[in-house]
Image (cartoon, rainbow, N blue to C red; front, side, top):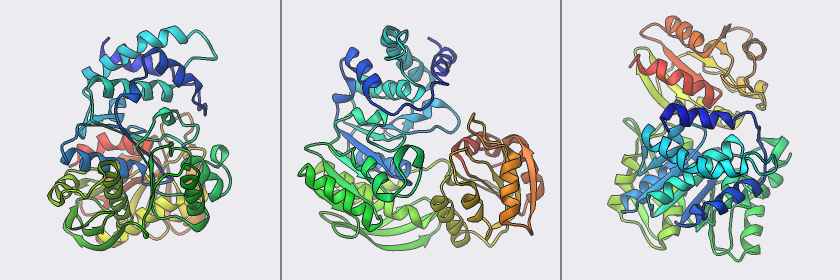
Amino acid sequence: MTYDEAVAYLDYHAGRGIRPGLAQIQGLLELMGNPHLTYPVIHVTGSKGKSSTSAMISMLAAAHGLSVGTYTSPHLEAVEERLAYNGLTASPEDFAQAVADVQAFDAVVDDDPERRLTYFEFVTTVGFAWFADRAVDLGVIEVGLGGRLDATNVVQSAVSVVASIALEHTAYLGDTLAEIATEKAAILKPGGTLVTGDMAPEAAAVMEARAAELEAPHLAHGRDFRLVDEVQAVGGWDISVDGVYEQYDEIHVPIHGRHQLRNAAVAIAATEALLGRALDPDAVREGFANVTLPGRLEVVGRRPLGVLDGAHTPESMAAGAGALDEEFPPFLWKVVLGALADKKLDELVGTLSGIAGEVFAVTAPSHRGIPDSEVAAAARAAMPDRAVHESGSVADGVRAALEAAGEDGALLVTGSMYVVGEARSLLAKNR
């Protein structure tokens, strides 16, 4: 199977929508001999910060000598980005072989509407199988949506991480923080350890109850571990973390966004929980030095300054806007903005009013993309004194924003990972 054939076979599964539940993926995995049960797993969920936390855990574990398979979603530019080994994305050839290996089993169930897999279920299975084939020491698995009924929840995790709780995907997860927390807390398994980040009291109470129900250790930020110091530095932050077993000082985290630093503390605690001991301070520094977060306050150009941020909730977009205000020169940014239909568009746009000088509304490249005209209308309502353009495609929006910014200005692409992914290759040429 060639790479193009593998992508085409994946796309064949597209259009089957989101189907919460585990029966279909469990059925296929059982046919395959349950590859996802052949290695320990750290399972990561959260309303925001789950991809960043997963990346940090992976690099910390690799720095301690473990071979680590990491599964994240969605991808930015190519689907194989969802699979990584010790921080390196699967090659197109490896990805094609992994798809071919699973296709043989998928063919058995695909003719049965009750057993066939969605796109997400299929690519999740590919990840599980690829990690087993490489005999990883650890799988770091990011939840796609929620937790309880997410396809990744077939794993038997040694450590379950809930990075944060906010109101999101309410059509699937519930209308309150407690309901959403219940969905996410369900990734904790008997015999595992729960690690949680900062969250509101009603969400924290759900986490405590789930841990008590399973008689599982629960390590909470602010109680059992904490971020104790954070200083802005060149290209990122210098931090100290009081971990579960030890305090770790002089850690340089080469990422932007103060809000990411608590994710770093969560990642340290999760790795300590996995190993059951204090970490090697030099390995901690090495691990964080190797962390990259594509599409999350990622600088992709200098003249003009270009930043990609896939924030797609009001909370994460507000955090991103705050980081730009804190860590970069006082620009009024040329903002390329697109979003998906399940997002709170008015609230999203409102968070940008303090930093946006001009908005280029685009249609996110997804069947759920909100038309650029609707994005523009929301931007005009939130920022009536700013120029707002209906730019159509992401490519057209990026080109127009680059021209408007000139060499001395600044460009921000945000609102959706789909928008950021398409813009990334265009802006990379501008570095």
